Image 1 (cartoon, rainbow, N blue to C red):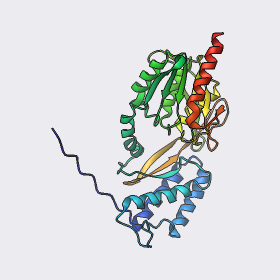
Image 2 (image 1 turned 60 degrees about the vertical axis):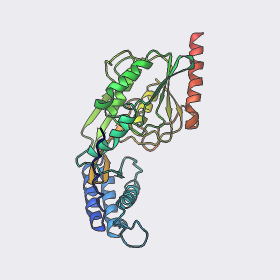
Image 3 (image 1 turned 180 degrees about the vertical axis):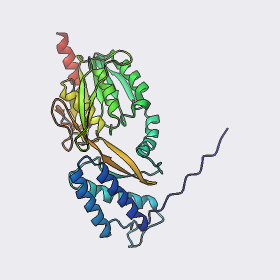
Length: 328
């Protein structure tokens, strides 16, 4: 039986008069939540000045008159302008006004959950590829992101159990744009032998810290902490995916192969400020227990630099060579 699809909600025009409330709410969320209060005050002043100067006037058609008919172009333009200003002081890539083509719900964190649900369903729960390569080397691709663990634990657990039997493992994060730190810890639990301190989050104000550890127990067998492990990265690898690569690298557990990552280490939260716009504001900073720092702004530096499209070939050769050496 064929059923008709529900009619989409018509787009909400982004009129010049509606820009000011978006900026005002962005400023409020920024000053109340950003991990660096002094930077938040600088940026708040910048956004207010830019608004007063007319820098955010919506003129999407280039004629000098607001283009009220093309809401998508207007909202996208505002998102680009505000994001550029938000990132102008310290280059924090998590600090942004994000445009969503489809309308997103109100509420803290609701916009991102709504926007990623389709990616979760179409990527087998964030595990789009598991493959056995020549020589007993397994390939596990995680992407397009590390989804919330209450969504993805079953898929991740099944995939990690499957590759646990391999002699060596390549984890592909080249197209992974971030996600849930709890999923990072879950994956690490399968790639280490015991509960391990991975990261420490320092929240805004410096009065509260929270440690992240890999779990003491995982469902199913572990790949473990001794067999050869390689992690692939690229210029699109971001946020929680960078943490996974960085944590394993700093522990000396994995060899990172590929390109330097984007460099976003601050955990953030999002708030809907318009039906198509979400403000994301970092409220903490990560500190690795080994390095004493993080990958913010610098990205994860690969141990074996190469072009991202060639990283799998390089890692596979390295894994085979390591296995041959171990067999001698």
